[in-house]
Length: 251
Image (cartoon, rainbow, N blue to C red; front, top):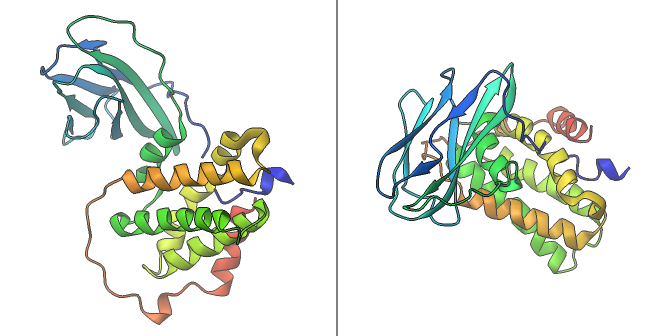
């Protein structure tokens, strides 16, 4: 029963693909150019995670199989490449040190909640309006956190139900396909939240912390803005569609 409480919301995908490798250097001198690539070449969703700096320090090649890095800021950096192998998402991870002196490279949190969201969302959500929709989804998680803090939500089961309703209502207002576009991501998110919570899955305070973390991570993500037309009444999900979504998310 507990395993189904958060059926709406990531498999912890920290396993590198067997046939693909993320190739790159272990150390870079500050300010010099370094490259990292998926071998054999394959399109990837790229991100760099670091406590030093992570914005404006890398550029993805037009083939999307290679990333170029340069930064004057010393520190450890982790390159993450999200790829698809046999229809399934995989993560390739490489950590390196950017500095004059070679220092031990710590073992990174290969499949943290934040890293998974940043790499898998662009792969699993097939929407052309991510700039708008990711903010709406983040707002849904944030709203449930607020309701828990205001004691309007007092049980984990109620939090789950209210989150489902909020997500469908928000996405249904953006486009006729938005709910289905997000369904794969939300479905994959479920077991990750369960794993993140562990034995605290029935603890509303811990649930609130995880939901806040998801909201914060989504808010940090940036996507190109697209032009969309107002949603027509005919595009609103039918009861059949909503019921199918709930059944899928409850598996």
